Image (cartoon, rainbow, N blue to C red; front, side):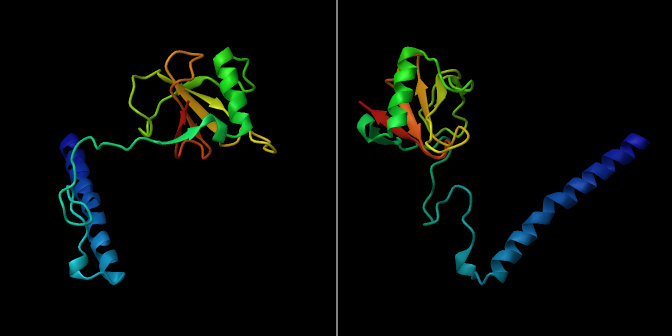
Length: 156
């Protein structure tokens, strides 16, 4: 008897919580002055009303940067990667999971992250180089100066 009662309570609570956000979204759009012609975009549609691609979306390749365009500290980090260290921080060389899929997809363990020193910074800063493939290899590397928010492929 207690199980049936508990199940009924959970089911009722799920129904209540599941419907809570639906009216709020619609009311918010109406309160902000949105008209009926500005209806929210439906799943599978882009803002222009054309069907959007479903499933895995093709991501554009990261922009490129030459080694000469990188800060001098990035060139130092690349030299350390090729030499296999020693690295200035214990976290250098750790696995980079690419969970946001901003870099080309590869099996887990392919990418490793390294710190690029930031002059004047009292910590590791936000600059990193992420390299793929075997250790000491710098042919598939990416630079970020905003802590993995965006990347530039290091060319040449």
